[in-house]
Image (cartoon, rainbow, N blue to C red; front, side, top):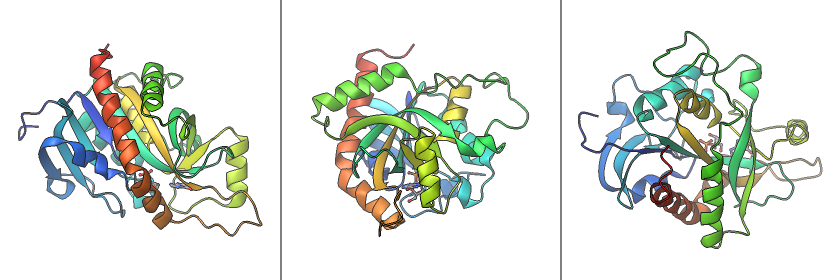
Amino acid sequence: MAQTDIRPRIGIVCGSGLGGLANLLKDQVVFNYRDIPNFPQSTVHGHAGRLVFGTLKGRPCVCMQGRFHLYEGYPIQKVSRKMPSMLYHQRHLILTNAAGGLNQDFKVGDIMIMKDHINMPGFAGNNPLSGPNDERFGTRFPCMSDAYDRELQQLAMEVGQELGYGDFLREGVYCVLSGPSFETIAECRMLHRLGADAVGMSTVHEVIVARHCGMRVFALSLITNQAVMDYDSEEKANHEEVLQTGKQRSEQLERLVSTLVTRIEHNNIYA
Ligand SMILES: O=P(O)(O)O[C@@H]1C[C@H](O)[C@@H](CO)O1
Ligand SMILES: Nc1nc2[nH]cnc2c(=O)[nH]1
């Protein structure tokens, strides 16, 4: 922070293939993760590994162009707590991810506003807040029934409608698994029955830590592939398709996020 005058009010985390969001920032000050002491490295194609400070339509922001995943071998605390140590001064956190669609009404290329999550690794004791609680950040037992800010969801829905995204803007529940293997057919069927609309390998740990320290959270999933639910299907989930769909929808997703950022300030959603 000593190396930049920019004091962001909004933090953004970019999902797989969605790092183009960071390139929208003007007056950039960029730090490569490899130059930040004790910072993990991005090891996944589609995650550049850069922390970018700048302004988005005049609003000071900081953007993680590349996140860390459990499957990269980092302890869960490192995956998520490094993020708010950079971003927790911000009032708002906007996260994006690539996800497989479980909801049969969803199509590849849909953008899903996250209204809730299912934290599968958490069921097995893998919660980013495990271990001693640092009371300076937040309470030992944070509430998660309000994890995704309803005012921001409503605002994003309005922005999406105004931009003409009604046909591909959805809302739903995201389920996180640890990855890196994609799901079996039986797993997809089970997750769908449990109430998940999309499945991925990130975001939830970051959301839990961000809520612990009181940030207002908004998250989007780009449905990059249809989860395979049928034994007759020839489809196979793969990272290339994920990145390809990211490329195809990046412009619309970037416009949605950048317009949302201006509206957050305009509507004075800072309480
Ligand atoms: O960082 P996100 O959640 O967008 O990345 C997803 C999950 C895996 O890292 C990868 C699979 O293609 O995309
Ligand atoms: N777990 C999981 N993560 C994804 N990220 C993008 N697509 C998928 C998917 O189908 N499953």
